[in-house]
Image (cartoon, rainbow, N blue to C red; front, side, top):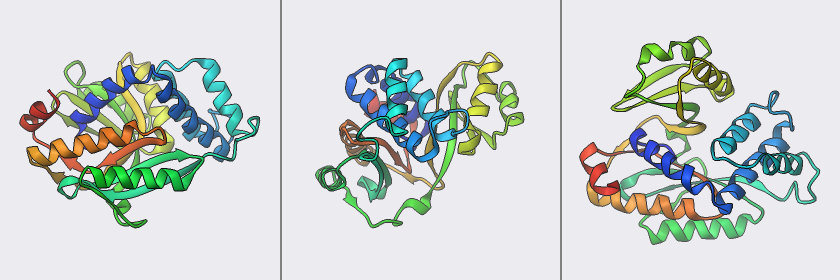
Length: 249
C-alpha cells in the first residue's frame, strides 16, 4: 500500500513475514501471470513482469513457483486467460481515497466482497474515475534513512530516478514504473540495502486523519489486504507520528 511512507514501511516489514504464507504467494503468482500475459514472458523486456518477479523474490517465493506463474501467463496454463486485473475506487473513513487492485477470475464475486468490506468498515465503493485522478503510478524504492543519506542515492538519479523524498527514518526514491528496475539495480549496485521496491499508486495529495479515523482506516485496509483476490491497496492518507505510534504500536 501507499500513503504515509512510515506506515508503508511498517506494512512492508509485516508483509515480508506474511509473504511466507501460501495465500500471499498466490497473490504474487497472479500478479506475475497477469504481467506475463499482458507484456510477454521475458522479464528483461517486460518491466511490469520484472517488477512483479522481483517483488516475489523479495518475499522469498520459490523459483519454481515464479516460473510456473510466468508459464501460466504466457499460455502454458489452461486458465491463463481466466485471471484479470480489476481496479476498484472508493472512499474510506475520514474521506480517504482508495484504489484497490485485484486479480480475479470472478469479477462479480470480488466486486461484491470489496463492496461488503468497504461498507462494514465505514467506507463506500465509488464509480470508475472517482478517485484515480488523485494518484499517479510510480516506481518507489524505500531505503533506511537512518543508515543512508540522499547523497548516497545520487546513483539512483543517474539511473533515471525522478526524485528522492525524505520522511524521518525513510527515504523514498521515486521513478517512472519503466525505470524502476534500473533504479533498483543502481542502488543495490552501490551496496545500499533496500527496504522495498515496487510500483505503487502514489497520492498527489493527502488527507490528514485524526486517531479515530486512522484506527478505522487501518482496520479497513487490513481487511481488504486479507482478501484472497486483493493484490494491493493504495490510500491518500497522512497521520502524525504520535497517532501512528498509538495506532500501530
